[in-house]
Length: 99
Image (cartoon, rainbow, N blue to C red):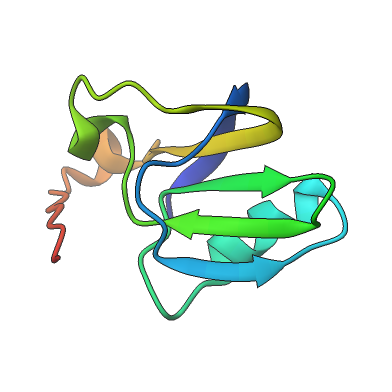
């Protein structure tokens, strides 16, 4: 089971918007990203004023060196996951992004 946490940046927006949800607080946005069935959510942007949560299937790996666009007053979180038991189980992880 992967252990996932979010790295957060202020005042930048996700590049691609794959789903729009509504959330009251930032942690609700993280939960929506974790539970999304529409897309494989890898990042989100929470717009505090509008209470909107922009979900994206992209992350820094898929975007390579793309600079995230500036937008004042938003918070963007990117999911970072590790699999701690992988070495013990000698497992293999296959990652595929379908667009």
